[in-house]
Length: 316
Image 1 (cartoon, helix red, strand yellow):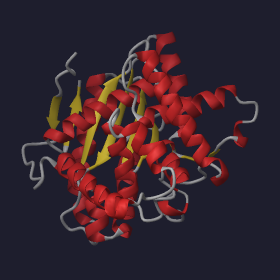
Image 2 (cartoon, helix red, strand yellow):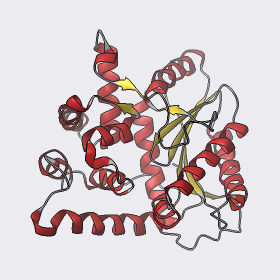
Image 3 (cartoon, helix red, strand yellow):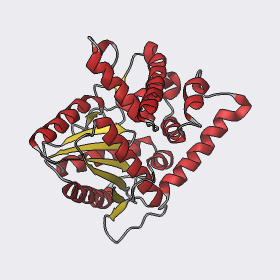
């Protein structure tokens, strides 16, 4: 079955991104760089990369392989404990180094089991979130398995009281909002926001500017949304907004407002005079949705939308 057609909502008619196909350009460059570094002298980036990442993902799920490739390219710190780094970037959880490799192997097996059960591919991020969600529900002492991140390590730790919490602690609230929306027949919408060309910003301008970009984005979001709305760091430069008592039209209008505000206000950012843009996908949750399926849907809409044009809002 073909994916549903996307509806694009440019923030306004003055769209002036130089690289409208930024996500395709980024993925191609990332793949070439990673493949070159991996294949020189047949050396792999780190032990068990072939067994746990390339082998299970490169052919059967190239999209998930690209996700992990991009995460590794965006950081110079992963080599110390690559599987701990990948898990943290996918889920917002930090795990003990001694357990990280074993946990990632379990995530891969969980992903494969989900794919068999649902008869379709499941992204590595959704599989990781669902794996830890089940661990949390079924474990007597979940803290012994994984520990929520105390703070967002990419944003400034001291001067950003506006920073969102990691994704994992908010998944339970997301589930509760879904149950409440079903019980009382209220609408519930979700927005996934992504900073366009964030990898290039880090590479060209420095990681400090990248941190400033994320900090400014969070500030803009928090002064725009309501206190009852739930803001969480999804991964990398992506943020998730859960909007209780909000329908698709209202969520789309909010996303458009955020896209426009970011484009205008970011031009005042010191060290990045051209500013930056964001792209958003929007979904109104349905009766049988779960946090994992909603996030997977938003990711698909966002990726397809960004392949056409950044600095816009997309819905199904």
